[in-house]
Length: 154
Image 1: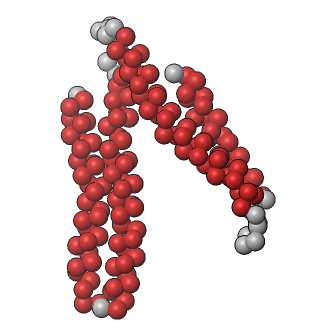
Image 2 (image 1 turned 30 degrees about the vertical axis):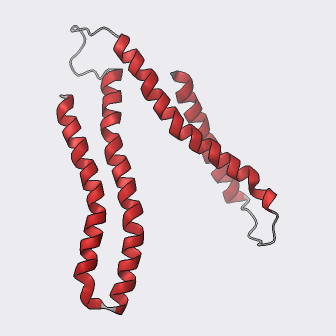
Image 3 (image 1 turned 135 degrees about the horizontal axis):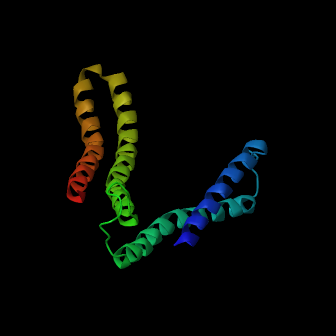
């Protein structure tokens, strides 16, 4: 389980180093630059996406095995958070995070289209707010699900 944490840490350090490298020496903005010049960059992004998608899932599955194998003890302090409680809290936070990302993806184009329409017809401002509210409701649904799951935790 700890090797996955180490892998995520190494990947984060590599991303930070790559950001510093590109800040010091940015890619050329030439249109006629050969495409094979940027092939390594696509591979790096693909590897990082693979790590950041599969590693947390692996941590959850491997952590569940550790939690299920541990025997409950009543002598420990009541305020101590176990691995199982930590994994449960991470699992409770996932719906809110994913719903917020989905709402951000939805609100971007809807907001841009709303501003364009309002510039031409200011009288339909109210309708555009309804559409923006529907898109933002996605995040609220994720928050409600997380609150319901948090109620089941205790």
